Length: 586
Image 1: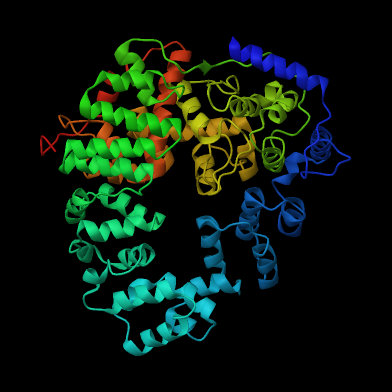
Image 2 (image 1 turned 45 degrees about the vertical axis):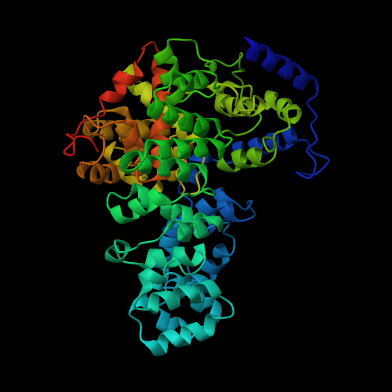
């Protein structure tokens, strides 16, 4: 009720003052509302059904030319490059318009480079070192950075020429080359800074990594550089199912500069192979290294698992963040949570909103102007623009910012667009959509995942074919109904192989092949192993998938409760333990 009243007061205030000025965001003679209305009108004047079939210059002129720089334009540039036969001039033109390059763009540029001249830096990244020696130093450096392992066996003449060319402009790269060229490269691994260490480490073979030894002093020195690349290597060592020598090396280290996620993994490493006391130290360090409520709760939860001290559960009970760890505390203590679940928003208009909610350019403009910043008074004035049934997700997103994420919004938009197979299916789809996109239908990720269910472009055509549809194009994923149908299709496929929602979540995020290979190792989700399944959830090798599974599973439990089914978390988690533990204890 408190949130509802808060919302209504601000909405009334905002309606009374609809002329909003956003400094430095747009011309003074126009309000944001006027701009959005103009955009919506411009969209309605275009025959949307025909836009899917635009090619070549027509596609460029509509989706790319004069459009704002950012993720959306990058996506359409990728589509333009992928679907058209372009000459080097056209390629260079759109390449210079890119905001950032992701794997999709790098892949298509590499393919194009086989038959067409591509921009110079792209050509350099694909160039052998011997060829790059004939180019500029900048081009040579690009080629070398992608081929450092070659210096372990490269001839002295070619290596010395590279070093001579780069010694003034790329000192860390040259230092890495010199270490890799030596016969005792493993011993010299710790002889330089953390950046050089990272470059050399990634160029070593698996056999060489098994020979690495270092004392606490060497690791402490690298820790003090506070370099993310070094911390990523520590993470990978803990998560690698092998590299026991390096895991033992970390047990002796006393690292203090590490970020929260690395501190937590060092705690997991201690818990598996070292000391519970040292594990507790790292879990406390992880808690101190973040202000994010989810990660704080996660670190506190691990302190509870190790100590079995219910005081940690009491602390979790005070958290306003709804997550697996706070749900566990609520159920274990059988007390009311501090976190608030908001299911319903105040009455929404059924009229058309003042902007097109299905145009990705419009959403990113809104996110960069109206929803930018954390000024509650400014954000609150934007409430009327989103108080429509068709913009419920955008309104919930806005309200979270106004609430400073102190409340947890579990809305159910687009619920009637498709016919659900079961309540469980609806709960799982909503859990995934909430995590993927906050239900924003026009979201495009940095990796070009599209729409409400964040379907990757490479999956759109295969999924459409499996669904018996030959009329689905990329832009159709910004239609909530089509997005839900395609997302549900994928979930159905995953559920046939992976029954438990946690495994479905991992496979949805990382791909079914990733999870299939991971589980086939028979190293995770083991029966009769201490701290299961929580420890296996922390050993998922991809950071994104690891956190994704935790969040989606919490969403699932909450949506199941909203839709009328109560799930006991402990019992539900035990169902993930599907493999026999060959080592019994560890």
